[in-house]
Length: 382
Image (cartoon, rainbow, N blue to C red):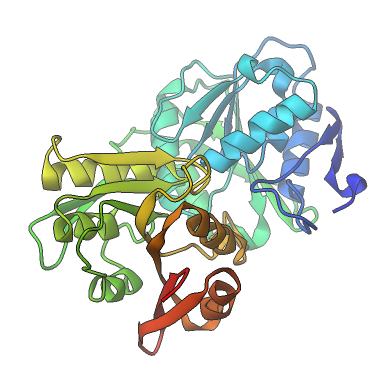
């Protein structure tokens, strides 16, 4: 991507913005037309320099937070990478990131709020949880603006907003994006959040709790079920990593099969790590050693420190489909594994992980497969 494609021109100024994780020859921008729509609307509705309290929800890579940095907004997201990109983009645009308040999805914003900007997330359960939790912070005068790409805004979005916040007014589509203005109705009842949700993990007595943004929140997904049937059981695995752990089910089983091992749970979702931590502590108590990391994959892990990495990689980042996150995970695992360590991966057959793993590892084996999934084992040498 050239410099002009990393520059966003909006009424608030000219912004330099980059996505994370960084990629050579990046082809995607760090903003979309819904960000532009929101910032244009704010310029028309809110006087620059006014004293207002702002909450930015689900900012992708910081376009909204950087543009509104003079108001020192609270930035509320479930994504570590979103927070990190926002921080770096603030610095790149000569703003002090310490002037903003970064909140994980498990944190609670503070009120009262004058302006709330919401990007519609991929998971509507996350939006529902956020609306319920922010509702007590609103007044009848709070301006609530919600935006997203048309193709990513099902009718359920309007239903949620009107049930939990108040009446809505939808603008005309612009560059394939829509903007919704919400008028808070304080007479509406505020229901308790239905999250986290629970289920009993089949074949165990473990209760699995899942926060709103956790993948396969209501039941065990078929890919993980297949992986669990074929997990490696080699002895002497002391350091095991559940990479992209979600609710931690793979790591729980690995911990049960390797009672002397330390399991590391890693995800870029704050809600995933919150779920994995609670699930592990219920299953094994607080005395069993385990580590929980919110971050950009294995960045920061020491080289040659792990015996086994288990990975069910995502094939999308927010709403963007692609294998670049998986490829990054494979490269990171190669650096972190010990010489005799192994990476075990499950993926949909069509993703062709076998070919990409062969580029990075000396040995790749098909462990097993079915009509939908493949399980692969990769190592430096057989």
